[in-house]
Length: 77
Image (cartoon, rainbow, N blue to C red):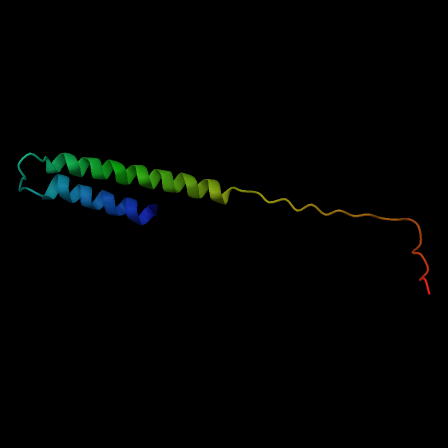
């Protein structure tokens, strides 16, 4: 979902919870707004945790050296 989706859910939820005064029979728009805001906050937290884990990775480069003290063999003709 990402940061944008989380912010979108928070905004839509706040509009439903605080700005909408009309009602739909059998549906509590304020509760739906609170649920959307909670889902948006949860999406933001999960996205930020995953981004932090992704940036804390470490990469190790292994270099193998094989030093042979013998001189190279002469070319075969």
